[in-house]
Each structure stands twice: as C-alpha cells, then as structure tokens.
Picture 1 (spheres, rainbow, N blue to C red):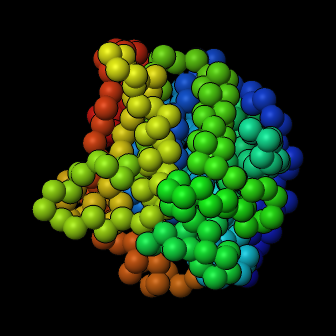
Picture 2 (cartoon, one colour):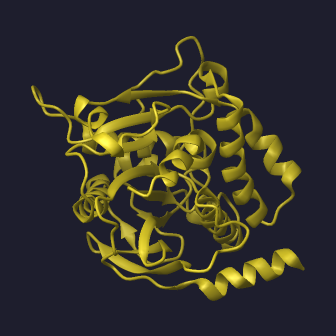
Length: 320
C-alpha cells in the first residue's frame, strides 16, 4: 500500500515541463548519454550522484532506447519510471518528493523529432533533465527483437535500416538523423548553462576503444552504437581539441577490469540503482542478482583538458 501511495503521489507531482529551464546563477551542464534506462546507474552511478550534490551542476541524461527487449510497453514504461526514481534518489527526493520540488514532463522537438522530457525542479530551479528517445532495443548482438521488427541502432549505424520510437512518435531514417538529434539536444542544453567551454560528456565506450585488454568484449550492441554516436560528436578535428571533455565507461566488463569502488561510493551507487529497482515493481532479488557485480566497480577512460580542472568552485570530484 505504501508503495502504491508513493507512486500515486509522484503521478500527481508530474506536470507539464517548460522548454526553457530556469537556471541557477553560474549553473553548468554535465551530460550522460546512455543506451538503456539503467545504464547510467549501473556503470557510472557514483559520478552521477556526485554531480547531483553540487548546486552548480545541472545533470542532463539522454536515454536512446526504451530498453523494452521483446516485451510489451508495460515493461519499458516501468523502466522509465525506475529511471525517474533514480534521478530523484540522487537529490534525496526518494521515496517522497519534498515540498518545493517537482518532477515535470512534456514533449520537445529536436531535429524534427518529438522527444519526451522530464525536468527535476528544486524551488523553481531545474537541477536535472531527462530525455527519453524511446528507440527500439536492439538486443545484445544487434539483431533486434520480433516485437520491434528486428530494428536496432547497430543496423541504423551499419546499414541505414530505419528505427522507430516504440511509442510510435517518430522514425529515425539514417545514422546522421540520429546523431544530429543528439547534437541538437546537447548544443541546446549547453547553451542554457554557463561553465567551461568544454563540459563533460559521459557515455559508454565506443566500438573501437578497447579498455579491457585481455578480456573478451562482452558489450551490448546498443551500448557500442550510442558510444559511437557520442564519439562522432566529440571527436576533435586534426590538430584541434574536442569541444567536450569525455568519459567513456566500461559496461559488462567493468567488474573484471575496473577499479573497486570505495565503500562510500559503492553505497551511493547502489542506492541510486536500488531506487530504480523498487520503482520497477519487480523483485529485488532479480535485479540485485543482475546488477550487483557492476555496482561494486567502475572502469573508464577520460579525455579532458586543463580548463575544467582550474574552473574554481565548479570543479568536481576526481572520481571522474
């Protein structure tokens, strides 16, 4: 009953989101771009939590697929609710949303595509935003699922096979269509905020980046495709620096090749994922057995420039 009441309370709090956010003075944007609704929590949840603790940071999460697998819409919608719960947990808004805080939602148009957006407001200031593109889950090997007619980001990237949002709202007809949409989201969100010329973008490692020598690359096709898309947007031109600092996380192999997190970071990472699991309304034993190895370690490669390190009060933890 308490779980139901908390869920209904959140539904009541959801309101239409404004397109132009109200920003805190000096607020900067940090970006997380992921394939599935739980990737950020599993593979970089500790840093996402640290970012959320700073009043100078506005977290921008972009989730490319609905993560629906071969299941009905109740599954991917539940995963989306779980992602919202994770973001609330980062701010200490879980299980209850405190007075003066709101989660709002609405649809924005980017590169001609309608995209569902959630805004997380603390006394009128937007602290985070979640973009849900709702694309079909491509399955681990990129062959897609029957329920979405075998569509996948890998096929979009490699052969130009169009991919549809699972809610039927739009089609992405080329790889350039998808990457341009990501770029418009990132460019607009960057323009809302101040901060360094090269903000952080954190995403899954791209397909040509080997961060786990000696181990078989066990990654998901959607992870690698999203990494490839972000790399194409952040790759510097010859003789130039990138417009972004980048952090590439390792996903399924992180507990084999990454550095063990100290207990305090394991704890916050687990709490962020725990909120996702609870609001998925599935048994914790199922999600814990899947997620636990990835919650205890973190593996990544950073490409950053000195301007961030010298940005005064906005500098973040060296965990990144």
